[in-house]
Length: 451
Image 1 (cartoon, rainbow, N blue to C red):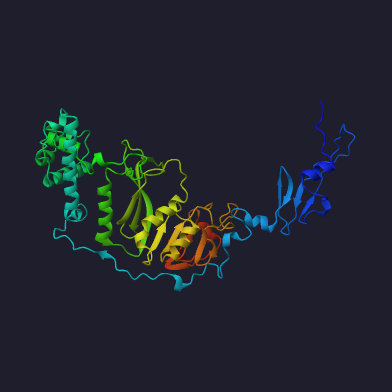
Image 2: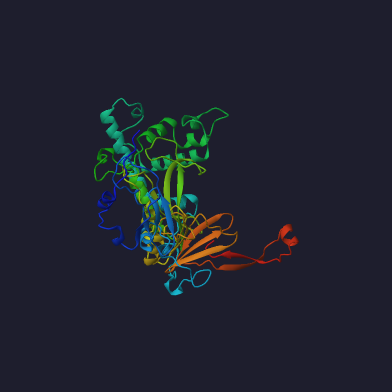
């Protein structure tokens, strides 16, 4: 079988667009590999040269194209370059140093911003959020939907016990909400079983509040928005939450206007249990409720009070979700930036750019971060780095500190407020038998301000 003819010297130079290999850039040299391959042609032949890029750093890359030594310029252009470490430097001290003048000092006043209800019961506080505005909206849209059903389906079963002239009112709507809340406490197999008169199954409360058939009719027509005004999919105004948007928006407004939060707030995700049919139902294996609708919530850290929330309704078409977590934090904290708050998050939301952005907008930020997240310090986020238990490795960029810490497990966090300096708790660490046998002495327990 014929072998492929090796390229001649002139052909090689012509392909490389060079007049003379000796006159080529000094950073590039050609290292021909020895070959005993003979050619059937009588032309002078040489093996194909493989470029070797010289570098003062001594770093060598080997690949299918030969041996390449990376220059500092090439390395700096690469993603997550090790030359400049993405701007992260070793701090002046082992724990990092943040200028206290650049840390916002919280001067806000948290607490109720509306008068407390005279009836200080769970129902009284409930009406602070689900007020007459919401109830009147329920009544209006429920009566409207019942009339729409009668126009299209005059023989619909639940219309038999429904008078479209009178419809429902606010008192009956409040009873409906009360029954639904009671159903969440008392679990029964079907809706009809709540009105059972069987001596074993009977719960008198439900029959006293509302007849069964009236409840089923009212619940069937219960609506929050006008179906006939719903924007079609693909239109600029299309909203997946259209049917509940008035109620959802009203709750958002009441959450933020009834109570002003303390300095420390947290952003996290929550799953509202739901096994029904909805396009954006999520399955999250490591959650207590694996099936449901996912909410992103901004909460007060000490009480868990929800200040603002955002429902995740899936990706927008086939568009790639870039910086989804950081964008959620920006959206939820929009009304609380430049007010000296401190935000805590987990690794799903945190990025180096987000911490800098929040700091520039008068908000401190502390959060764990994924080690491979773009913009991280490349040396301390390396998988090859091993951190001893209880030890920290710190890098700093401007007034942001990156900490690699090993507690129960190895993790990494970014902070624009706290350093990695440990704080004495006043307690003593109990030594194990092995530690006492080695002659170790008891020491004071320490913790970090960001824990």
